Image (cartoon, rainbow, N blue to C red; front, top):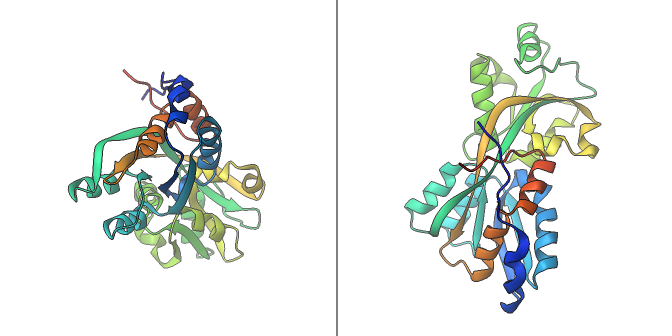
Length: 252
């Protein structure tokens, strides 16, 4: 797989200030909690628009949109939820693949679990019956939970770990759980755990699991929505995604 920076550049903003200022309401997967504020700051500096963001698990946001939540743009951590909205005729235009997210296995400084890509440390703790709780996002509606399940299945541990699982509502809540005394390990967004305030609180390893990040305009999208969707594909935005632990694919 090749990785890339999009070739779109910031001159597209030359015309943005001609549009009447508005507040853009965005639904965003919780794994964007650190990178999106920086993206929004740049966008707001280049335009007269404000952006309001609601963070949650992608499945939760999809349900809210299906029930009439007034979002104009949806940034999902998995393409499955975008497709649900397309099938329900609640979108407009094409979905955009703007980045790939990565998954990490994390143990706090208080945990005795050995951290490794093959999850052998976790396997050993299960076999020795010295494991307390392992936090994951709920696979039913959170893409990071689905990615964690995949990683555990690849390691042959999905069934064995069931008695120890602590399911969080979304990826951000998993990070919160991972720092509590009862949780010895967690499957967290790589984009979260590389943040300095979190990285210093434990040990982590990046796993070979990625999540395709997609965005789509919703049925009531405005011109500002389209502008922000274009912005997250620019080289400036892609640089920020890379800074925060995301991958970007090379265009062919």
